[in-house]
Image (cartoon, rainbow, N blue to C red):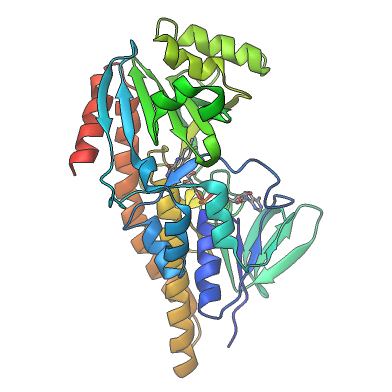
Length: 379
Ligand SMILES: Cc1cc2nc3c(=O)[nH]c(=O)nc-3n(C[C@H](O)[C@H](O)[C@H](O)COP(=O)(O)OP(=O)(O)OC[C@H]3O[C@@H](n4cnc5c(N)ncnc54)[C@H](O)[C@@H]3O)c2cc1C
C-alpha cells in the first residue's frame, strides 16, 4: 500500500525527512515556497552535534560526505571582554569531531541531492480530516490531498494552525546580522581576531558574535535587549550601522570594526514557542523542527530538526513494512502519534536549556555568559 506523504518546507527538517525516506525507497512530495533553492542567502554556519545532526546524516547515508564538507577547525571559540581582553581561547583537538561546522548552503545541497523539490509552492493552509485526507491549500487557489502532511515550514508555519493555536512570542532579544567577505585578504586583522571559528564578546545585556564560514566569509551577529515595539530608524545599512555603533559605544576598536566593515544588515527579533509546546494529536498532520518547537538560537534548532526528520522517516518506513505483512487502518497514524510524544519530551528539555541559555548570554552580568561557555565546554 503506498501512502501519499507531503513535507512542507525544504529546510533541515524537511530535507532530512525526505532524504531518509528516499534512501529507503519511499519518495515523498517536498514543497517549498522559495522559488528556487538559491532564491535567498542560505544563512550562516551550523555546528552539527555528533548525537544529533551528525546522527541524522548517518541515518541518511550522508555522514562521509559531511566529513568532507565540514570544518572541524571551526569549533574554535574565543571570548573577549568588551575592552578586547582575551578571556577564553578554546581550540579543538585535531581529532575533535563533536560539533564541526558546515555552511548552511552546503548542508542544504548535501541533503537535497537527488530529491525533487517542488519550489514555488507556497502553502497557505492545511485542512485535516477531509474525506480525501489532509488537504494542502496553496497561494493561487490550488489544493492537493495527502494521507500525511508534515509541517516542516519553520517559525511562522502555515501548517501549525491545523494542530495548535500556539503562536511565537518575542523573547525581548533582537539580533542584527551582517557579514564580511574575503576577510583574510581585505581585513587580515579581523581574520586573526576571529581565528578558525568564532569570537564572542559579551557586555551588559548585549553581545557580538562573529563566525567564520568557508571561503573567507564571516557572519556577525549583534544581540541586545530591546522592546518589541521600539521605533526603529530606517533600514538603510548606514543607519543601522550607526545605531549599532552607538549601542556598542566604548567597546574595543577591533570589535567595532566587525560592524564598521559589515555589508548589509538584517534585523531578526528572536521569537519562541512555549517551552513545552504540545498539541492534541490530529490524524494526518504533524510538525517537525521550528514549526513544532521554535526556541532561542543556541546551536540546537537545526540539529533537533534534522534528528526528528530522520527519526520520523525511520518510523514511517518501519510502519509501512509492518503494514505490508499485517494490513490495518490507522497504523501510520498510531506511529506518528508515538513519534510526537518522543519529539515533545526531547524538545522540551532542549527548549528549557536554550531559554535559560539566552537569558545568560544576553544578561545584565556578562560573567553569566562566560560561565555558560565553561559549563558547555566542560561537559
Ligand atoms: C541567527 C541564528 C543562528 C542559528 N544557529 C544555529 C546553529 O548553530 N545550530 C543549530 O542547530 N541551529 C541554529 N539555529 C536554528 C536553526 O536555524 C533552526 O532551528 C532550523 O533552521 C530549523 O529548521 P527547520 O527545517 O525546522 O525550519 P527552517 O530552516 O526555517 O526551514 C523552513 C522551510 O520551510 C519553507 N517554508 C516556510 N513557510 C512555507 C510555506 N508557507 N509554504 C512552503 N514552504 C514554506 C521555508 O522556505 C524553508 O525552506 C540558528 C538560528 C538563528 C536565527
